[in-house]
Amino acid sequence: MGEIILGSEAVAAGVITRAQLRWNYRPIYTDLYVDRDTDPSIRDRAVGAWLWSKRRAVITGRAAAALHGAKWIDDAAPVEMIWRNNHSPRGVITRRERLGVDEVCELAGRLPVATPARTAFDLGRYLPFEKAVAHLDDLARATRITASEVLALTQRYAGARGVRCCRTAVDMMDPGAQSPKETWLRLLLIRSGYERPTTQIPLFEYGVPVAYLDMGWPQIRVGVEYDGDQHRTDRDTYVKGIRRDELIARLDWLNVRVVKEDREIDILARVRDALARREREGMAVNIAS
Image (cartoon, rainbow, N blue to C red; front, top):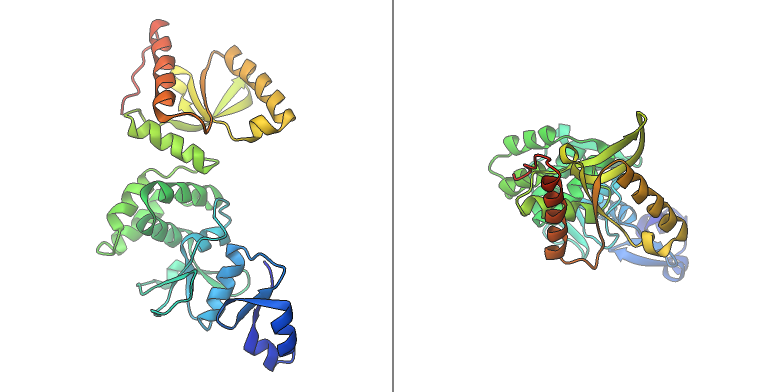
């Protein structure tokens, strides 16, 4: 993490002068500074927000997820903290909430952070559904948190704000998602009435795993994948993608590939076409949820 300076403490300790503070640093919160040439990450800002709270708050939400190793966090996202203060600076959200001692751990030295389960509980309650599921997928992948651990907190705090939303989001959590777009695609399929797809499906040749599909239904050998821009902009990735497609076809899988330009209606039409082909081949297709 970048160096966060508590201005008054640094000047009082003689670490820097006021002139150095003014010319070499810029404020991110009241009395909190970062090197003028540094673009602080959400982890940096979490440290600054905790220092702003006079080292009393507990980091939760997206900043906590980032500290636990989640990768899909926008550095501009607000830092959410559990602390009794109604006058937080811009970019910081404080909430007065109950918090058990078993729901806090220490990271990055002495920084108090909500445990993965408590972090997931707060993500599921306060974010819109699709964003919540994407961040829960990301956190589950990073920490291996389980739905039962999070749902235990929904029982502990049964009357808390957003608990019902949290339960719904946690029910959709899947650590197999490897990007927010994969989460979006999985939710699209479920929302359209299909059975929940299996994620990260291994494909075997001669008993050895040779590829993994983002998601799909192994019982009928239909896969669905989201292709990021690297498949178009990186030549090596493009060539490997061609060879991979040949391998998937050789193993008798139908693979529906999705790119960002695709409309939802077109994606679903291609999935229906793949299922119809399996039916014509005499395969029992029953993946309606």
